[in-house]
Length: 314
Length: 249
Ligand SMILES: Cc1cc2nc3c(=O)[nH]c(=O)nc-3n(C[C@H](O)[C@H](O)[C@H](O)COP(=O)(O)OP(=O)(O)OC[C@H]3O[C@@H](n4cnc5c(N)ncnc54)[C@H](O)[C@@H]3O)c2cc1C
Ligand SMILES: Cc1cc2nc3c(=O)[nH]c(=O)nc-3n(C[C@H](O)[C@H](O)[C@H](O)COP(=O)(O)OP(=O)(O)OC[C@H]3O[C@@H](n4cnc5c(N)ncnc54)[C@H](O)[C@@H]3O)c2cc1C
Image: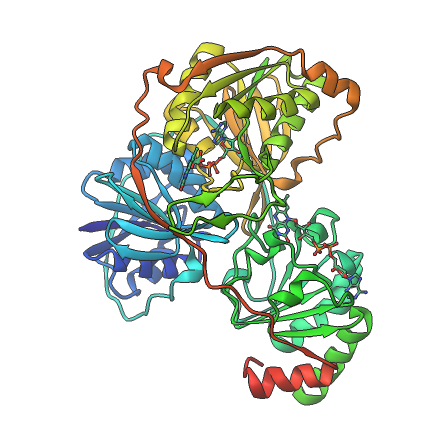
């Protein structure tokens, strides 16, 4: 068994999601190589080399890989695929973009969003917004897998893998990067945060997110999330959306303020250890899954909470 | 320019699904079925491109049971011009769906294919990317804005940290995210007109592609349900519980 892990990074830092997907890759049994493709990304390769149980790090440093465009990236992975029994990537937006293209080029049926490895060919994955867990066995010789990273622990450090430079392959040249707008934030990242506070439609504006949610996030060192309704209405940026079609999160504490608890939202928070709901409607469905429910107007409850936290942290 | 939009018939987003007692499948008897919400967004986008003069014709394809004709009618009511219904019973995996779509595309020659980013039943998020790979076409997944400029298309994509804008050479594949548009409410005259639009029927076997499933579904099960906890009376009590009972802050 030999596995190739496709990494996710921003040319500077290896993502937390990659370190978690590595745990999944290791549980397949056998050796794991990690491929880092990007531009000026040697530092990322060095971080990968320090993760435990990595055999080799393959570094492809070229202009074509700077922005993780699917066409050149998939061509590279396909060119490396021959000696591997499995190709694994985290279910991040880049993993989800690239891996199915790789799978099709290898004539393999991808297994999406694996949440548990039962055997090297048998996996669990959530379907129907997490309301059903499917156990599937693949008959493909090569396996192509994306990993639901909230289901796996981060791989430990202490590794000393070798780094080998590999050559770029021909870029089909059919796509071109134009620009990007990334929301830099000093806050914890949603998919790896220990505490998350999310706001829903009830927040009514972007200003209210800043006024009512930020102070609590500051005090708790929490990441901020949102419901789809809040994102659609422009109260919060798109990458804050938690749920079936947004981010899947698994914090120790998830605070939902002014969120009703639609199944699509709940799909994203099923693995939270503790769920707190603050909602003025005692019949809101969110209370059916909340460990602690507070029936209250968030416009009084949140400032009160911020004030109490300020007291105890002072 | 011709746009092709694959539309899938899925369990309605508001329906509750239950696993059959023997774990062999999901019980869909009496459950409401609808057009996949993302595909509705894809049809709306194609319709807007046609209204702007960027496209001349919109063809929709659905692969599934005979009842999938209903989702083609939903697509017609938004603005699609004609449909292809590829009838097949049983489990078609995204790879097989992509192979059938490739065969349809080679005959129809569209310049642009818009799919949903994921079907809300199996949540695979694969079909568009696989199709792009099989055709050797460029792809832009998770689109939140689409502009046609001559023989190119500019697409803004929703990515983990924000947005990325790319330019693709046509022909190309796009998969759409939630915020690409809000589909119109089909008015009665559009629904009436939709009944008259043509649907061509074929069988999945008529394409000569390999449809053999690669995955065996061994079991379906419902995950342990979360139970409702307790109601607290005040913010003070809540913080006390979080500190001293749950130990999470
Ligand atoms: C295909 C599809 C995919 C989707 N994907 C997602 C997804 O990934 N994530 C997601 O979140 N949703 C998703 N949705 C949308 C989902 O169905 C709900 O519409 C959405 O989650 C509702 O957001 P909300 O809870 O903020 O708004 P609402 O349902 O409107 O709830 C607002 C809540 O705030 C409460 N409230 C109002 N005022 C106050 C106040 N002053 N103080 C306290 N409480 C107050 C109300 O009682 C209510 O419960 C999806 C839907 C579809 C069809
Ligand atoms: C009775 C039955 C049982 C099944 N059981 C399983 C199962 O247990 N596990 C499983 O993984 N699959 C199962 N399938 C197959 C499943 O229905 C999907 O067709 C397949 O998995 C495609 O995945 P997706 O819909 O999640 O694709 P995605 O890649 O998420 O779909 C993305 C987009 O591709 C297009 N698309 C996808 N499928 C079609 C289609 N049929 N027609 C037109 N456009 C389409 C749409 O634009 C869609 O928005 C079953 C099918 C049947 C009929």
